[in-house]
Length: 542
Image 1 (cartoon, one colour):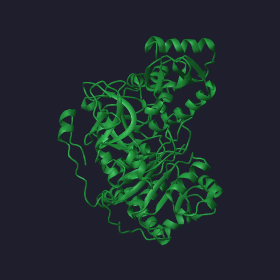
Image 2 (tube, one colour):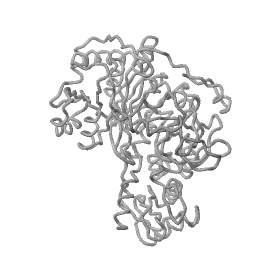
Image 3 (cartoon, helix red, strand yellow):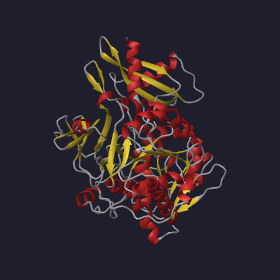
C-alpha cells in the first residue's frame, strides 16, 4: 500500500500496483497493528486553548477501542448494524470509529452542525441502531428520537440522559477479537454533501482506507517523514477530514492533532498549527481564503509546516500563489468525491503542480475526462471527471438505492458529475458541477474560474457565481460576495469588482450583477451550496 521514494510522476504512476490484504480491517490497521510493536507511540494529541494538550498512545487506543467494542456487543449491537457518531474532533471519536470497525459494524459519522431535520433524515435513512454523541447532540436527538424506530441505544461522552461513554469503556475488558473482514465488507457510510440534491448514503468497504494511502503519501510528499504531524480544521464527519487526514495518518503511524469544535477562525487555526508544531495540514480552499484574508501569519505565529493539502472546492490560482509566496508552501490540491475520493492529486515533490489545476491521476487510480456515456474525450475538451471501476476507494453503492448507484456509472466509468478538461501534460482543471454550469449568450461558463478571479480582489473574502435567468442571454452571471472586514459595500465597489473580472477573464464571463452578502450558504464540509444561490437568483428573476 505504501509508495516507494519518488521524484518522477510517470515512473511512479506506471509502476504502482495495489497490494491490499484479503483480511484487511480498518480498526485493527489503525490501532492494534501499531500497539503490538510500539504501544507507547503517540497517535493523538488534542489542542487545549488553555495550554494543557493531552495525548494518547496506540496502546491506549487499542485497549479503549477493544473495551468499547465489548460494550457495544453487550448492548446488542451486531455486525452490519449502523452506529452513528455525532461528535466533534476528540479522542472519543477515534475510539468509537476503531471499535465499530473492529466489531464489523458500520460507522455513520454525522456533523454536529446538522439541524434536527438533517439528522432525522440521515439516521432514519441509514436505520441507525445506536448513536454516540455529546450533550449538545443529545439535545437534538431528544427532539426526534420518537421518530426514529430503529434507534435503540444512545451513548453520551459528557452526560445527559444516556449511557455514559466512559463507564461503558471502563466496565468491559480491554481485549477484543477483531472480526474477520475482507476489503469489500462494509465499514463506513458517509452521506454526500447535498450540494445538488438530497444527500445519499455512500457505503464503503474496509478497502477504502487502504485506497487512500498512495494519495496521502503523494500529496504530502513522501509522507510520513520524521517529525510529521497532521491537523485539519475539517470535521471528521466528512470524507475529507476522516479519510484525507485522520485515518490514513493513524495507519501510517503519524500523530494527529484534534481541536475543539468551532466555526473556522483564522487566528485560532494559526495558533493551533504553531503551538502544536503541525507539519502537515489538510485545509479546504474556503479556509485557506480566510487565512489569506487574515493577513501575514508570521507577524504573530511561527509555523513549521512541511506540506498543505487542499480539496473540496477549486483552490484557484490566487490562493495557490498566496500560499506559495506568503506561507512558503506549494499547496498540493487533490480531488475526489464521497463516493470515490483522492483520485486526482498534485505533488510538488514529484513535479506535479500547476496553478489552477487540481493535478493528475493519483497512483493506482485511472481517471479521465469522459462524456455522459463514458467515452474518453480528447485533450482540451470539457466533460465529466470519470473514474474507472474497480477502484479501492470506490463506494460499494448508495444505501438501499440500487437505481441511483446504477446511474452513477457508464461504460465502466464512475461519473462524478464534475466538469473538467485535461491538457496535453495530463493536468486536469476543474470547471464546476454539471448543475452549476452557467449558459449565457451561447457560452457554457464554469463558476470556479470566476470565483477564483473574484477572490483575488483585495476587498473580497469569499465569493460564489451562479446563473440568473435572463430573457435575452438565457442566463447572466451573478456574483454573491462576502467582503473582508472593514470594507463597505456600494455601487462603486460593485462596478470595480465587475471590471476586475472583465479585464482578467473575458467579456462574457464577468458578473453582470454583484450582490454583497454577510455569508454564503455552506455545507458542513465548507462547500458553497450554489443550488440555494441559484434558487435565490431564479426567484429574483421571477
